[in-house]
Length: 139
Image (cartoon, rainbow, N blue to C red; front, top):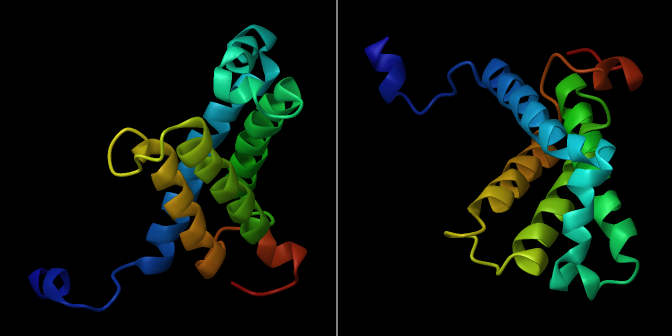
């Protein structure tokens, strides 16, 4: 066991990546649940940066909708690469447009979600995913 800890070889990589994908999906979907609560959504549209966007209320719902849908897609492993691109774009928008672009401190949360999403763009869902049934591929 000690030798495995110091080895550069992957250790349970597919299972670990699948668990991280599912946990990330739950966290993202949880953030996106606000899309179903009008009272929770209204304050976002009052932010100056949001008010400066075209159709500010639509943009707020679009962003939260992306969070919810991409999170659910991550949980079940469906359309993982498309979901990862949407999640990354949404989180980078939050980090660099809504936030102040301080990804190294203040805006770490959305930036790290974007980094995780980009990982799944390259790896795909790895295992325990509907993508294998949808696209008729074996795990």
